[in-house]
Length: 178
Length: 139
Image (cartoon, rainbow over all chains, first blue to last red; front, side, top):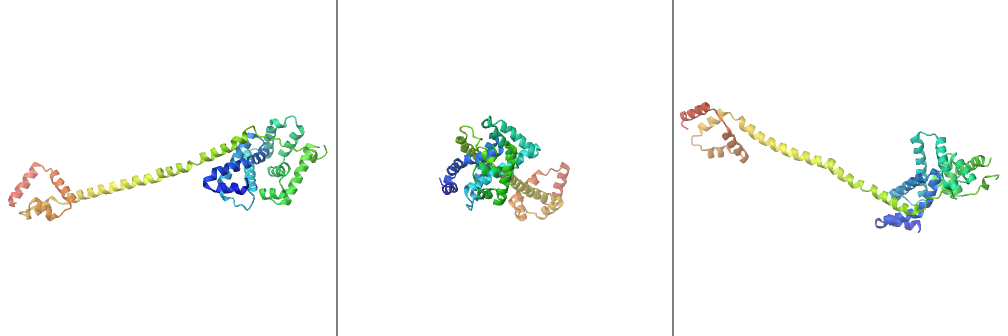
C-alpha cells in the first residue's frame, strides 16, 4: 500500500485503527532492525520499537508530508534510540566506555554471533564509536540509505555525514583488521 | 583480509519467531490503555472542583436562611417589655388580631412574635404585678 493511502486511512477517524495497524506492519521490521543494531538487546529493542510507534500514533496528525513518511518515522526511531542510550548512561552514572562495555557483553550473548569471530569483532568495533557516528554508519552500511536521506533524518549536512562515515570505517579497520 | 570491504556484510540481529505477528496488537493495546485516563481526569475534575463548590453553595444558602431567623428573633427580643405594655395600654379595645394587623408584621414575623409571647416565662410575682398594672389601667 502506498504511503498516501496509509495516511488517508489514518486521517479518517473511522479507519484510524485499521490504517495505523497497516502502518505498523509496513514499517515494523525496518524500525526494529534500526533500533536493535543500536541497543543490541532484543528486550530493549522491543521497548524502544513500541515507544516509536506509540509516538507515531500520537503525532501522525502533525505530519505535514513535506518529507517522506519513511524519513519521518526513521527520525522518531533515531531520536528514541539516542534518548534510550542517554537514559542508560544517566541511570547508572556510566561514562560512554562503560555503556559500550555493557553492550559488548550483550553482544557476546547473542546467538547469531557465536562462532563468527570477524562479525563479533566488527560489532564490538562499532560499539567504540560515539552513538551518532554509529547511527550514521548503520544507516549507510547496513540499511543502504543515501547521504541525502540520512541528512534529513539526522538534520546534518551531507558533507559532515560523508566525513563521519569515512572516519568510522577507518576506526573499524584499525580495530578489526590490524 | 586487507581492508573494510573484505568483511562480509551480515545482518545478525534477528527477531524471535512470531515477534512481528504480535507486535501491532501489543502496540494497539498500549495505546488503548493510555486512553481511559482522559475520562478519569474529567470525572476527577468534577469531584475535585465542582462538588466542593456545590457543597459551599448549599452551606451558604442554609447559613443565610438561619441568619434571617436569628434577625427576627433579635428584633423581637429588642422590644422592651415596658414599650410593649405601654402600647397595649394605649390600645384599649385592641384585640390580639387587631394588634397584629396594626403591627402589620409579615407571616414569619407574626408567627415568631406569637411563639415568642407564648414562650415568655415570667415569674409568678412578675405576672401578678403585670395583671395589677393592667387592672389599674382599666384594660
